[in-house]
Image 1 (cartoon, rainbow, N blue to C red):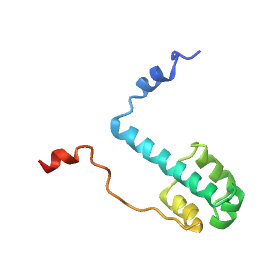
Image 2 (cartoon, rainbow, N blue to C red):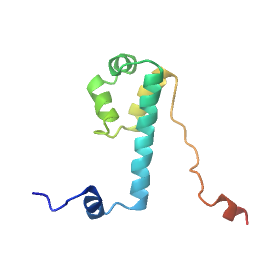
Image 3 (cartoon, one colour):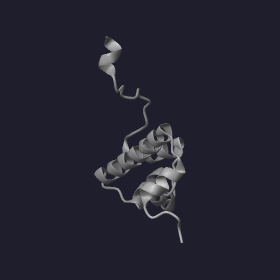
Length: 100
């Protein structure tokens, strides 16, 4: 039996840093955006597989958050749908303070 009774206790034990938390959230956001694009393009995972060359089981694992995609994999999935990745600055939390 597990010594943890809930996710909050387990999460504390993982000792995830704020930076790691931000990285996890960024990856989740990227995957969610990819899923949204696929659905907006009316593509099944199988059709996206055919267009991208990435096998359908890999797409399914990425979309279930069971596998972390490499950047090249995301590019291969997005490109046939008319999208790509772009490097943009992170939003600054204290923009007003920087101006003072």
